[in-house]
Amino acid sequence: MAVYTDINEIDLAHFLKDYDIGELRSYKGIAEGVENSNYLLHTSKGSYILTLYEKRVNSNDLPFFLGLMQHLARKGISCPLPVGQKNGSSIGELAGRPAAIVTFLEGMWMRRPTVQHCHALGEALARMHVAGADFPMRRSNALSVDGWRPLWNNSKDNADRVEPGLANETEADLAFFEAHWPKHLPTGVIHADLFPDNVFFLGDKLSGLIDFYFACTDLLAYDVAVCLNAWCFEKDHSFNLTKGTALLRGYNSVRPLSVEEAASLPILARGSALRFMLTRLYDWLTVPEGSFVVKKDPMEYVRRMRFHRQIKSAEEYGLLPVSAAS
Ligand SMILES: Nc1ncnc2c1ncn2[C@@H]1O[C@H](COP(=O)(O)OP(=O)(O)OP(=O)(O)O)[C@@H](O)[C@H]1O
Ligand SMILES: N[C@@H](CCO)C(=O)O
Image 1 (tube, rainbow, N blue to C red):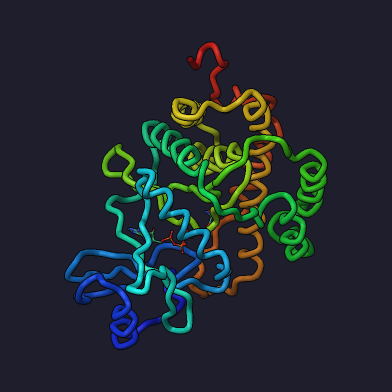
Image 2 (tube, protein in one colour):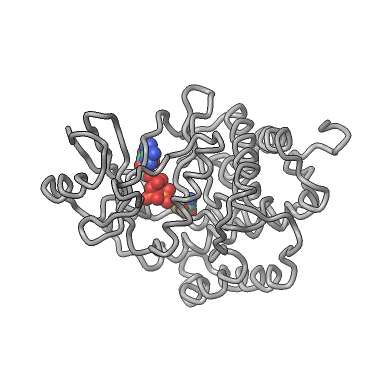
């Protein structure tokens, strides 16, 4: 569960004096999430989410994350809106942690996304990319190709404990990406972690995007690749072509991928599978048993890496040829 930092009602009431969100009626920790501590607040003015940023979030990045949510919300993207303090700042401190309050989004995330959900997700992702185009701040992606080797160096000696041969397999992939990673594709603001648990729906209608704490400036098509990995594989690890087609069709209906982006999709999908394998592997090997962090299975993403190695073109993910798509 993700409540690493405990708060008490006295400190919370004191913290809330800096905000104009009414009287506190109740608060409770939210079990979901991995990175930060989240609380649901009910006040006389409504419901809010209080986030205490834990060690893995660099407080220097908070103005980017919170500024981005403000920018996207202003452009009509449904995402949490940071609530300003009376002095205008959106970042405070509580229990020794940087903390922020954002508006509560209605909806729930889909444990088993359908083809319709994948289509809606593709559309929403493209809308977010378009809305982010004039966001003035930049943040480089610490978890792109240059960041993978340092991350890998922490795990490589123990990787074969997860599966014999994984160390050599990963080394070969890293060398491949370092030599071939695309550099000249369109860039902009990407979410970089738009998994189903970060997308809320009310029925089949997408109601909002949350968790912008990996957002950064990077290749837009990389975000599409992350979503293909996160949304279009089934529990038995097979790729669902119908879901891939729906996701890409949804995306293309708002922001058509260029020919170059489409051609790079296989390497981007393979690279983003490696990125999630590496962070999962690190947690798998380092987070002690019985800790609050829910460890996710790195092998799920090793299987995806193997799948993407066989892919020759974006059509195999369901991208329709340009003439058929229009
Ligand atoms: N604005 C919001 N409105 C409604 N619920 C929210 C909101 N923000 C967060 N939550 C709830 O808190 C949970 C955890 O949030 P979030 O995903 O941001 O946490 P996290 O620790 O950064 O997790 P991770 O990075 O592992 O996805 C969500 O699954 C959701 O239940
Ligand atoms: N979405 C990530 C975890 C949190 O960012 C994963 O599934 O590995």
